[in-house]
Amino acid sequence: MIDYNKTTNKSVLENLTSIIAQEFRKKPIRYDDSYNGNTYFKLTPIEDEIVDIRTEGAIREYTIEIQYTERKVGRYTKRDSLDGRVNTIERLKEILRRATASIELFLYYVTSDGENFLTSAGEDVLIAKRPLLITSQDDFFLTSDGKAFAVYPAALTYDWHNARLESVNYDPESERPNYLTATADFKCLVEELYA
Amino acid sequence: MASIYTSVLKDNVLDPFESLLKSEFGKIPIHYDQDFKHRGNFFIRVIPVQDLLDKPTTEDQLRTYGLLLRAYRRTPGPYNKERSLTQLINYIDRIKRLIGNNSNYRPSGTYAWNDGVITRVNYQPELEDKEQAYQVADLLFNCNVLV
Image 1: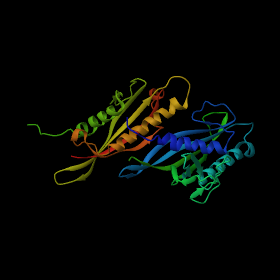
Image 2: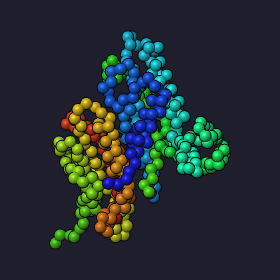
Image 3: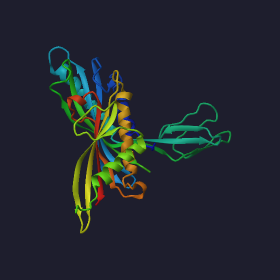
Image 4: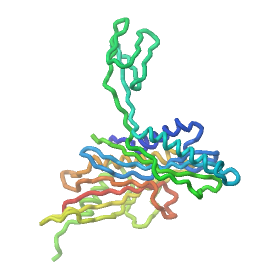
């Protein structure tokens, strides 16, 4: 069996799920329409398409449909039937605008005894027990008992770039009669290396 | 007297493609049905969709071939993301990587194709009524063959 990256699921679908879940903590995220709650997001992979072929890799554009669904309440009014969807989609656009490139920087700290510490770049590291290590701009740390802390080269985790929400549609009709929906296409580029 | 010719689509594209898939996935059922037929819970239908002259030369031709692969997967029971969605998605990523690793394909030193790539994956293709029982994804495979 070849080694391969589960790009569509791990880098795109699960990463997008995680970003939405962190922001909308009380709204379930589903992948089908069997949910009967008041509000939920549904994510549906639509397609991926080659953008550029590299010598040992490829850049692909992935499209995921994000559907936000609210249960209908009484007569259709702007306040009860539209504002909630608009606000949710605008909030979603904003969090995805901030996550245009899903790249995280981590720094590794390793003691001379081989103990490992991992931190996001820029975050302070505080180790309560001795030896005490308080960071974070320097590359080298000496502790009171003579242990040395070396900073490993920063490691990047990459999921996607050029992410954006395209073509939002406040659907006049829903496939589920008791619900109102808003549908948006999420697109992002992922560069995959084969080597 | 009949002309001597090579069946390029069969010898350079269809047969090597099937053997490449089977070398990776084992006994995966691959069918060439023009119309949909139930072939079990998991199978691939291959439909040739393109044979295009890319570049004529004095004695040769560079032609672009396209195969539509329609992957079918049926999972019994209620919807479950892992079984009903993720497994097929991962399977497709594995095919993409397999083709990426073999974009210039020469099984046993014999030229088959160059620039092979899965150009597009469609997770929401239009389906006939009979296909609705399956989770279906379309993959478009393209390659060039110097004839």
